[in-house]
Each structure stands twice: as structure tokens, then as C-alpha cells.
Image (cartoon, rainbow, N blue to C red):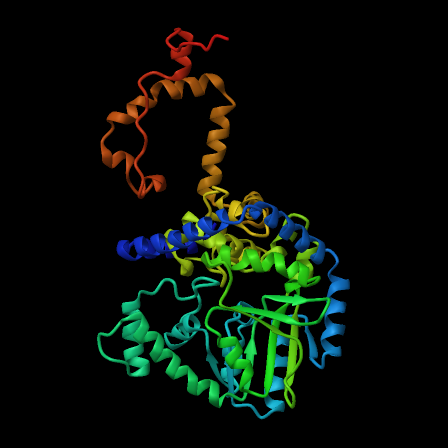
Amino acid sequence: MSTKHAEAASRFISNKEGETWHNETLWFVRVKRDNVAKDVPEWEALRELSSKIKMHTITHLDKYAEQFAQNAEANGVIVHWAKDAKEHNKIVHKILTGHNAKKLVKSKSMLTEECHLNPYLIERGIDVVESDLGERILQLDNQPPSHIVMPAIHMTRQEVGKLFEEKLGTEKGNSDPTYLTRAARQHLRNEFMTADVGMTGCNFGIAETGDVVVCTNEGNADMGTSLPKVHIVSMGLEKIIPDHKSLSVYSRLLARSATGQPVTSYMSHFRKPREGCEMHIVIVDNGRSEILSNPDHIQSLKCIRCGACMNTCPVYRRSGGYSYTYFIPGPIGINLGMLKNPEEYSDNVSACSLCFSCNNVCPAKIDLADQIYKWRQGLDSIGKADKMKKMMSGGMKFLFTHPALYKTALSMAPIVNSMPRFMLYNGLNDWGKGRELPRFAKESFTSMWKKGKVQKNKK
């Protein structure tokens, strides 16, 4: 199996200070999530209900997608259907050229990252401006997001301050968060004022009414849709939910799971275009309908993109988002990447300890770790199983199925305790990189039991 993730993770870990900061920062968010969840007595009931609503919706998506589109069109919205990323980008570009637009101001959208919309439009002469603070920081630094909710979480305020000095002309050496935020706000205000078209992602599409819901903490989605006369919504097919009653479940789960907040600062509903303006919704498939037919991995479509699985994942926290080769990192990214192209993204399945913490925090109760385990079992069938691991597994299988040999090996194991260190920790021992081998007991438990040295529990 390719070591792309392992190599990138090794580079990230080499910066011990950065690794520690990243780990502790994300764990702080995970703790916040736990604390606010404890304040909701029915938390687990909400998770179960969330899971059932999502599973019901995606297994009846033909009905709900049609209902959503019909209601949106009845509201005066222009609905477009895109089978893949290429079609999505063409539709957006056609809307922009139809209005002679030169500048597009965007609210954060992982779907547009998935479709590589920004470079597509920039190549065609469109000035694309990210308005989410984290996304704007990364755009100025020419980097992709490293987290789906906190895209610039890997950067320190000192790094942001230095970047703003170069790009925005801020005070040299000033990395005060309030100062940097005000500088970004002033910089973005002009972009909002001069944009021809505004674009948002979509957290939820309400089939019953045809409106879309966008959750933000900065109000950038509202600014981007209030000033330009054209609003484009980029929406994944799986974002549709039945009604506002269903939305009430997710509104209680999303922010608490994502950042430990009771609710996002802004929960904006867009149902119809402003008077004299246009609103477009581009509904994107891009492989989602294929996932519907995959019983082992269909639950991936329940994801509400909260990022809780990343915040809790011990591998993601210590290896960083850029160590993953798919554009979405962490447990959900591993699964989505494999669904997109298992041969290309198979390196990511090793980035999991199978601790199942992601399963336990997911607000939609996606079986993330179970799916990763299934992907691992199928690596050999696509020619991506690690040869060394295959050889080791074969050797262990042979040892465990031959009791006499196993007992002999067990009796000789303590010899390892006195072997020179260079014989144990070298290039052949991947396990020894960053780990210490355990000391073997002088006498095995089996031997102690047979000699009566272990006191048996008498009932």
C-alpha cells in the first residue's frame, strides 16, 4: 500500500511544537462538544432521530429531491441539476457570464472545493473572493482547507499576522486576533460592495418549502447575498431533509458537535430571490447516487459536515489535515475518498486506530470506523494491500495455528529484553518508530496457571 499519508504525517509530526498545538486545540473543541452535549438530556435520542431522518431521506431521495426542486421553482428560484463536478462548474460559469459578472464573492462551501470551482473560474477570468475568514486566510496563502469547519485551524495567529503583513499591509509584528479580524473585515467589506454575484454553500435543503439553510458564525453568507443581485447556491444532493421539524433536530446537533456552541451565530434561510434579483440553486450529484447503491457505505451520505469526527480522531489531531490525500481529511474523508477512487486514496485507510471514537461522537451516528475496517479488508482485492503487512499477517497466522510452535516462541520471548537496542530499533522495525516495545514477562500466564501460581476465583 502507498505510504503517502504516512510520509506526510511524518513531516507534520517532525514539528513537535506544531503537532502539540494542533492536537491540544482540537481536543479543546472536542471537550467543548462533550460539555454542551451533557447539557442536553435527550442528546442520544437526538442522535438516533438524526440518523433515522437522514437514512429515511436518502433512501427516498427521488421523492424528496423532486419535492424540493418543485417548491424552490414555485418560489421563483431557478433550479439546475449537475451530474458531476464538471457540469456544476459549467453551470456556475454560464450564470456568471450571463450577467457579465467579473467578481464572485463566496461563502464557505466544501462542495465547491470538491468540484475545484475556484481554479476553474479564475482560469476563465473571474475574480473569486472567499469571504469566510479562515477560507480567505488560506486563499491569500494559496492553501486548501485542512479542516471542514475550521479550515485554517493548523495556522497560528503569528503565522496569520505575518501573512496579513504581506498581503494586506497590516502592522508589522501585530498578531492580536482582534486587530487581525478587524483588518480582514475592512478588507472584505470592499469585496462585498463590489461583487457582481454572491455564492453560498448549503447546510440543509428543506423539501417541504424549497428553502435552503446556511449556518455561519461570521454573517458572511448574509453579506454576500444581500448586496449582489444574483445569489447562487451550490448544494449536494444529500443535503435535502424533509421539513422544518427535521431541521429542528439538526439545528440542535450541528453547532454543538462542530464547535461546542449551542447554535451558530447565523442560521440563514433563503427561500426566494429578493425583488428584482435572481436566485439559483445548483443541485449536484457527483457520485452521490452511486453511494446509494452501496449497502456497506451508504451511511456516508448521512454526514452533516460538522467535523466532530476530526476533532476526536487521535490520528487526525496528531498528523494534520494535509497528511490526507483526499481534500476532506479525517474519518469521513477516508470513507468519501475511497468511495470516490479507492485506488487513488487507499493510503488514507491506514490513518485510523479503529478506536471508534468517531462513531461515538457523530451526530448522525455514521458507522465511520466500521466502514474504514471494511475498506481495509478489501485492499488486497484492488492490489493495494501492504506487502510487508501481508507477510507479517501470514506469519502470525501460521504461528497461531501451530500451538507447539507458539508455545516455544512464547517461552523464548523474554530473550528480547536483553538484546542490544540496535538489533530491535532499526529500519526493519516500523513499530519501533516512536514506540517502545513492551518487556516480556519471564514466565507466561499459561505457565503460571498450570503451576497453580494464579489464584482461581472460587464461587
